[in-house]
Amino acid sequence: MKAILLAGGKGTRLWPLSRENYPKQFVEFIDAESLFQLTVKRLLKCFRAKDIITVTSLSYKFHALNQIDNLSGVNNQIKSQLKKNIIIEPYPKSTAPAVMLVIKSQVKFNEEVFFVFPSDHIIKPVSKFIKALKKAEQLANKGYMVVFGVKPTSASPGYGYVLKGERILKGYRISKFVEKPSKGKIKKLLEKKAYWNAGIFAFRGKVFLSELKEHSFDIFKYTLKSYPDLLSDFVKCPSRSIDYAIMQKTKQAALVEFDVKWSDLGSWESVMSYFSSGNTNFSIGDAEFFDSNGCFSFSKDKLISFLGVKDILAIESSDSILIMKKGHSDRVKELTQYLSKRKIPHTKESLTVYRPWGYYTVLKEKENYKVKEIGVYPKKFVSLQRHRFRSEHWNVVEGRAKIRLGNKEITVKENESVFVPKGIKHRIYNPSGRMLKIIEVQIGSYLGEDDIERFDTY
Image (tube, rainbow, N blue to C red; front, side, top):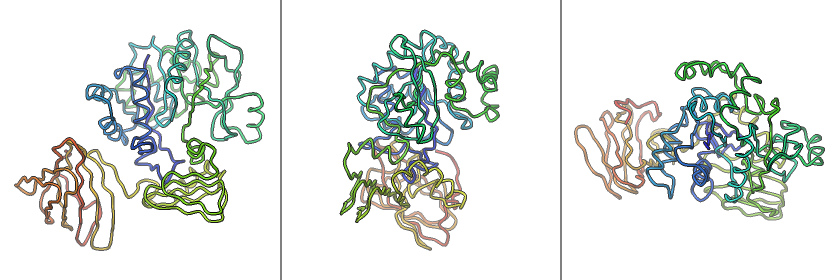
């Protein structure tokens, strides 16, 4: 068995927590771990590290690498194998081309069963997850294209629905797919005991290619190219999901019941539903509810107070607050598109910006000075650089830094500081096995991020 982990989505419906440059699968969500990290650790209970293949975009490659490096309770040998198995999708083309890319790269294993997992799901308990995988493997080995179906807990229009047919082995044939139906249709589907399409699939590699050839030849034809040519021509490949490319057309569609506590955290209401356990009001972070009902808040740093309101969701991030009426969370994507059209930058990045070496957070910014917290991952460099218009004052608050300053190299420990004049080349290196944190104060006539002349990419 092989696992394909899809980690290229933008997660716009969880804005403002999820941003284009740092989507929801990489955001720390539960116990200081991201959904991506939780998914990888769950898969390691069922698959060997060498059989877990992550597909992501070039923009998110360093997020995936860094998050694998920071997996808790996982040894370095496993981490190294997981990092070797990252495949970069040249352009975002939805799930069918992404899976095609992996199977093309694994051509000698095409007799094996491939499982496809999104990287932003929460699934509990793992024991039931493993049982469902075994049922799906049996069906896949018989030539079926298997989808995992979850019993609905609400009439959500944000999911695809699946109707089961006759019993086969430990699953069912699929009689019908209905992609994101209207609320009126959902009621009828629930009466017929329809399932949510969990977006998790299982099939043999050769069966996927055969069904792709029959039902979406315009995508399949790219598998006839060499792998390097496929990568270079990937931009021309049609963008289509597995559901539309194959599952809604094939005669080999089968369903396995996914009897677990599951959520794709696809909207703020699904977050509320998953975590609230039926409470009238619920918060992740600090909140107070006074004479209010059916409300939800998410906050990392601030207290959110509700007074005399009903069915309101309030989401706080470092630079944005989203307030909406319950029932509108599936429209957050429309909101982010609207903000982007108005050239409002908050949909792309937050005050915390992630880089291959770590991150920086803007704490305060005025016309002639800016204060940042800089975090450098263990054994990572910030590139050698200099600035024309600003000087910098660095104070190490956690860890130890090796700093190149002109022709000198100095070690700066916690509670020690260094001054970086404008025009001088400098670089930060974290030599330790723990996070390095620096408070940086920039002073100058221009403080834009483009006032950087780089000399290497370490």
